[in-house]
Length: 66
Image 1 (cartoon, rainbow, N blue to C red):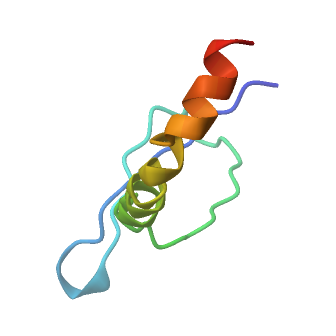
Image 2: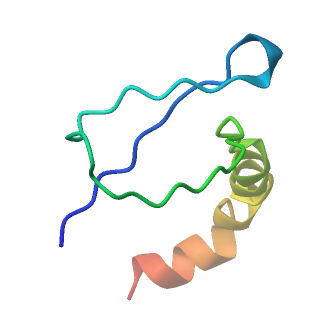
């Protein structure tokens, strides 16, 4: 069964107003989960900090002849 997640923002005073594309009387289950902004800085730092590994003339020489 295909299900679509809907996202809403909290209004003033912590109020949440839901206007959905669902028909009146449709039964739903509501999960409220705080969304955090996507932050990939730790992954970027990890990928950038290991670039020296690839700059290795001995390794280049070995693999170029493989």
